[in-house]
Length: 194
Image 1 (cartoon, rainbow, N blue to C red):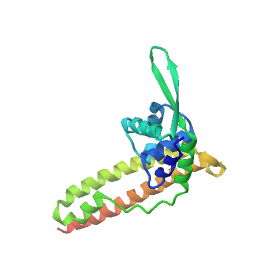
Image 2 (tube, rainbow, N blue to C red; image 1 turned 180 degrees about the vertical axis):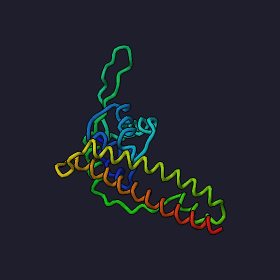
Image 3 (tube, helix red, strand yellow; image 1 turned 45 degrees about the horizontal axis):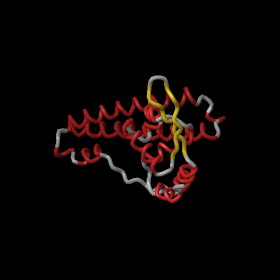
Image 4 (cartoon, rainbow, N blue to C red; image 1 turned 60 degrees about the vertical axis):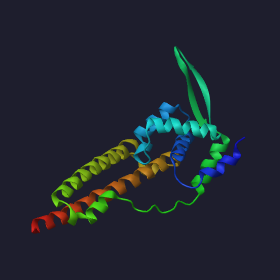
C-alpha cells in the first residue's frame, strides 16, 4: 500500500486533484479523461492531453490510481483508470482542506494600470477582444446550464455540485464582461479628452 502518499496531495490545487475528481465521478481511459477536460473540467482547470497522461502516470506511480488493461483488436491494450483506496482517501483529505484565497494576478489589469505609458486605442481594442472572448464563454456557460440543468431546484448530489460550479463560472464571466464594459467606457472617455 502507498498510504503515506495520501497526505502529500492536500496542500494546493493541482491537475492531480482535477483528475482525481474526474475519476471519482467515473473510471476512464486517459483519452476519456482528457476529453472530459476538453468538454467540462477544462473550463475551470485547463490541461493538455499530454499533461493528463503524464499526471495519470504519476498518480499511478504514487498508488493513487489503479488501472485495468482492456484488450483491443489490432491495437495495444487500453488502460481504464480508477481511484485506488489511497486515492479516495487523498481526495477526501484534499476536499476537506481549507482553500487559501488566491491572490489576483491579471496581466490586463497591470496593462490598464500602466495605460498612460502606452497607446489607449490599442489597449481598448485588446479589452474589446477580451470582453468578446469572455462573453462567448458566458454564453457557453449559460447554454450549458439551460441544456444540462433545466430544473436546478431538483438537483442533488453530483449534478447539484456540477451545477454550482457552473454557476460560479457564470458569475465570474459576468463580472469580467461588466468590468470590461466599465474599463472600455473609462478609457474611451479619456481617449476622447486627449
